[in-house]
Length: 127
Image (cartoon, rainbow, N blue to C red; front, side, top):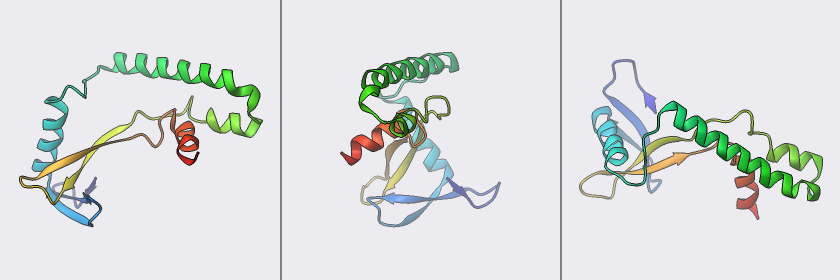
């Protein structure tokens, strides 16, 4: 999110479907984010402890998968696949503004660029 100043009441975000930047009121943006997060069966609010458990389970599952296939991988490939296991970030939620819709709505995006499965996802995407 790009803020103009600490006290700014607007933000500048990319639009959906990639038609340039839009200027939005922060109040509208936050309200739309909370509407999508709270009124959905897709998202569930987690406490820190629940999030840690999910991250640990995902890490263990990914390690088990990598152990299964490690004999078929070279060292550098294994190193790449395991590169986020100890240094990852939980994916972040944001929305892009759907400028073609009336009334205005946001398109939800969960960006996991530094998630522990990001390296594997990149390889799968390229295949």
